[in-house]
Length: 137
Image (tube, rainbow, N blue to C red; front, side, top):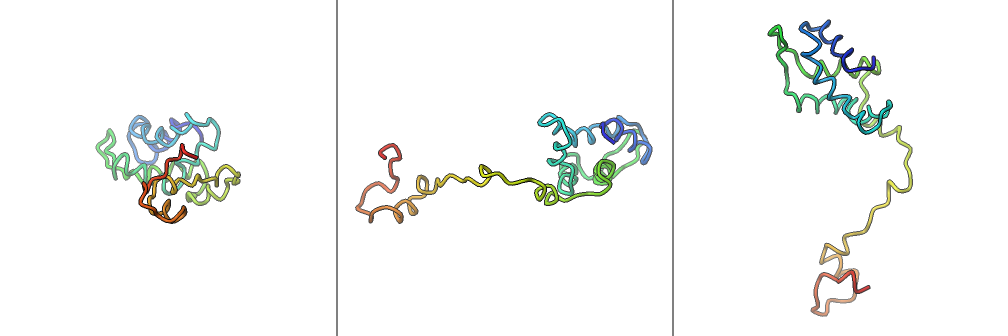
């Protein structure tokens, strides 16, 4: 498939109404093209959890111009199925990400914010401030 408008035309063919009835939902899926303009943008919303997020954003159903009520989740499933032929999970996307060293570097802030961790990892408490001054190092 590709363009949101073509997904919207497909929705109109399937459930009636016009492409404009469905366009905002299909545009929502593809808003991530603002971040990265290739297929990787799909990792943010083109999966099972993304379909549920679409439903939280637009509601359980929409009423199209003909008065018909259409479940939003079905429209989301249609979009992802047209792009992939199946509905991946978010875990499917994550498994495809090659880990890089910077992704796992966590800064040990607990010594700065947790008075008990700071006290336990420093000299015995002598009655001083439980918050060590990081600039004093």
